[in-house]
Amino acid sequence: MDKPKRRFSKDTVAEGPVESRSVAKGLRILETLALAPAPMALKDLADTAGLGKASTLRLLRTLQTTGYLVRDANDNYHLDRDWPSARQHHLLRLLCESAMPPLASLNAEFGETVALAFLFEDVIRVVEVIESTHHIRMSNYKGGILQPYASSLGKSITAFQTPENAQKLLYTYGIFRLTSATLTDFRAIQEDLAEVRERGYAWDREETVPGGTCVGAPIRSPGGDVIGALSISMPKDRFTLELQEILPGRVKQYAEQVTKAMRSSEDGGETPKKTPRTTVKKA
Figure 1 (tube, rainbow, N blue to C red):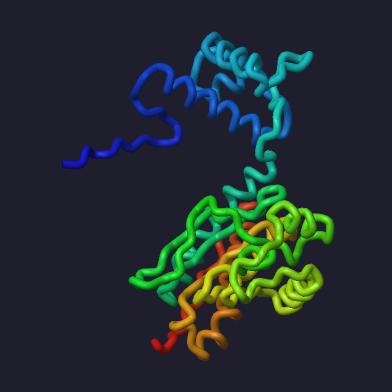
Figure 2 (figure 1 turned 90 degrees about the horizontal axis):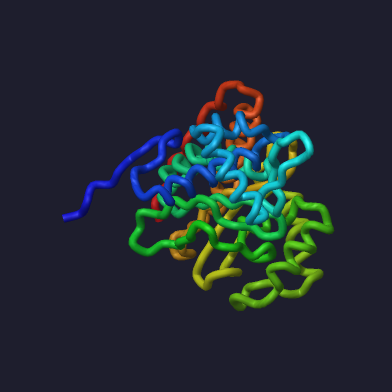
């Protein structure tokens, strides 16, 4: 018999050993400082952690000793090592929260696997996946690093970066053949990315997995930069001519819906209305 899972809110810490609670409090402090626009005082961090000043000070000293924090001349604290920047951390959270309703709608409309990707410095990773309900399907997995030159998600993001950033993404991942359809010539890749910019979406026609078809579209941050993408993928045996005509526009619409939702959340406005569904005949 399975044991029931405990549930607790983000403002409470699960029961357990003292060490576990200490780690949770310390991570909350680090997350708070990562999002903070300026160094923070002991009192404010104690309020965030839900601890007294003495207990918070012990945690801060530990984090300072291990090189995570620095205390400045005004006795305020800030991070002292590479961490997802405050802005990047915020954008990732905003993207995931804004994208889940459109992703669920896209999955429900076509019944195929949908995925969300985010640009982390010099790599592109999958951050959300809703799998197809079909027995035979194209799968994806959270945390996976994507090919910036082959996957529809990767191309949808890479195509809209500066030439320097795009080149860094390509060199960081490396360029090598995954299938017989994978582009490995640098000039051919550049031409393909230029076409993605022109039409506003990217294809993956068996470029990463034999027998797989995928289409993705870019998502822009409230500031206008492409920081993410969403996609839908399926076995090519289910990829009909009708879907070839419909999917690019639909994926672009859903991606734009996420962009608008992010902008609305940033501005404190209302979430845009859902994209109307289209009936597609089954193959």
